[in-house]
Amino acid sequence: MTDAECSSIKSCNKRRVRGRRNTGSSGGEEEESDGGALAVAMLCNKALFPNRVLITIALTPLVARFLVRRQIIKKNA
Image (cartoon, rainbow, N blue to C red; front, side, top):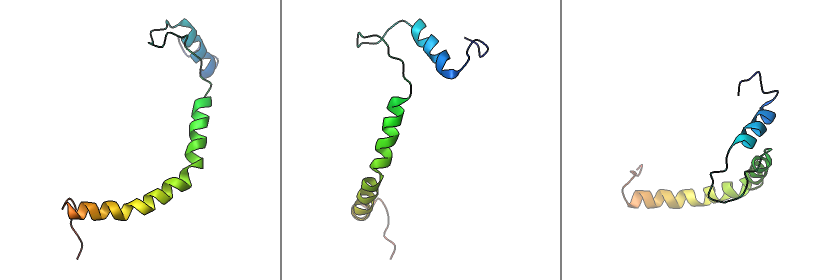
């Protein structure tokens, strides 16, 4: 499908999805995506950011000590 045939990306994608045969193993029909899954993923990413920062701050010294003991990295002293 050319760009001239598509009035917008979303309508072009809908036409492509409708024209496709379902080759997936789920046995169900293909669903059209309007970006809702992406929005939920972004929301979860933003909501869990403080937790990820705390985990990173807590684990970094432990991982660094482990790597020094295994002589994977060298100690600065």
